[in-house]
Length: 412
Image 1 (cartoon, one colour):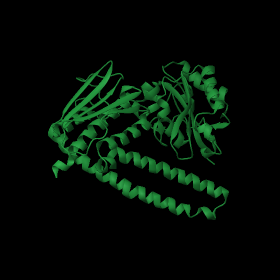
Image 2 (cartoon, rainbow, N blue to C red):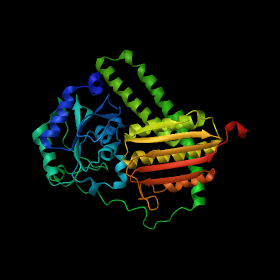
Image 3 (cartoon, one colour):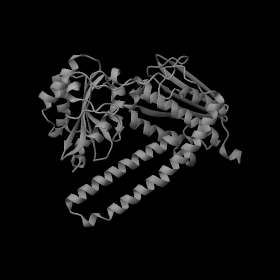
Image 4 (cartoon, rainbow, N blue to C red):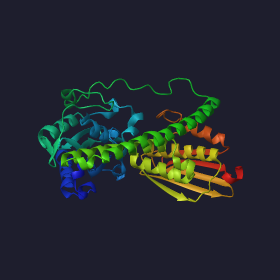
């Protein structure tokens, strides 16, 4: 039986015993941050529900599919993770792939799977926001002295530690303060490697859009539909099963639903169907929901949100520019809220994506991810005759797109 046995109050964060246990654990071992993530059923996303020492509520909006982020990796693998110095073991450009590390600015952590009836249904994460030799002892005390195999009547897994790259570490070396050999960090992207010229980038952007549309359609119309067919076939078994068989069947349904959700998110990132069928703003809203669940930042929309359909090329490029700006803000700014302002007047489209985060040097940006984001945004703007401006500093970042707009019916 999985986490579906948890009562509604537990899943909604209203279990006082769980919250009290998290707070007491943080106080006794002087952790900076302690949180407990819970999944509704086996295969469902994990959400950080009970916390102590948080800097904001941003982490509570994160929903981690199995295998994604610290919580998702621990949930899927059933193995704990422990790092005493994240900076030395994880390339800083990859922090955004682990939202809880990014949202709470963590530097050392221990994440432990929590089991009920042999299924991982929760994750306990204890962390510090700095690096110290004393942290190894704190994690050792957590496992050996404080928990002793259970937390809130759930079994604690404390063997077989894995790293961010999912490679096995030696337990003894981790608990003595050495997180194992995580390998050399990847070289910086600005090391003299060839750069794309504009004509190359334009061709790549066009090819990417075609390929994204094709893959998105195949995921939705092919893989997703096949999985739905499997669920219908499984449902026919229900009347032939005993209680134990029904429980296993329910877990299988949960796992398939989790895969369908992940396919939907991937499809939205590739090419949201809303962009083709409903238009610019509905597609942006769909993207915002994915980003909120992935990174925890709230995305707030303002302005004229009843735009008509307009030139498909403009819709696509404006959407991609906004998608990149929203994603960058959620991943890198550290801002709790990202604002998207949309205005359409006198045949002009004005879009602004802003945050009040840490900002960056626009003239000499630190290379993150593929390193082509800002260049790609500018090239997309050039393709549709739009003006793109990026302002950033200590007060945050503002990306503004201004472009002439033609309604779709004018092109026919």
